[in-house]
Image (cartoon, rainbow, N blue to C red):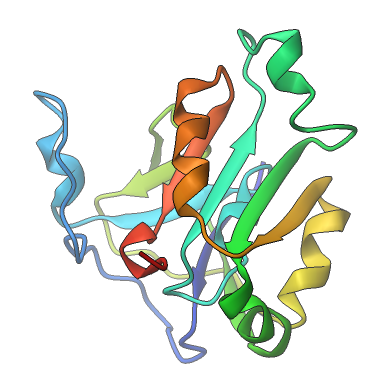
Length: 172
């Protein structure tokens, strides 16, 4: 397994733990996840962060309990990534940085490939990733461009795993 951190900043030499920019409501005992941490994503789920930083998106994939009916939403794909049409040009033209992180000192959150470290982390490598729209197919993820993400909130009622990221930036 490999761990990555994605950023638009190509000059990071050390990751210092810091609180999240927009705290989330956490279940009891998990409030520490809003505190100072270094975040990483595993290589299986890295597609969740192959976007310009503020790009709103909804990502779906199957879970063990996903029903056959809901699996039809994926077709032959491992998962799907939805973005709004207004973000497509930026997805095609921007470059983001993929920092490979050492696995030591990271804790598995058992949630969609997310890992955290409470310590300072020095990355192992840096790779610039361009033409982000082309990266999804390589990972078995279908990129789906829609006019609005709002109607897709109903996917939360499915048996699929649904991750909604940066929806505050989506069209109303």
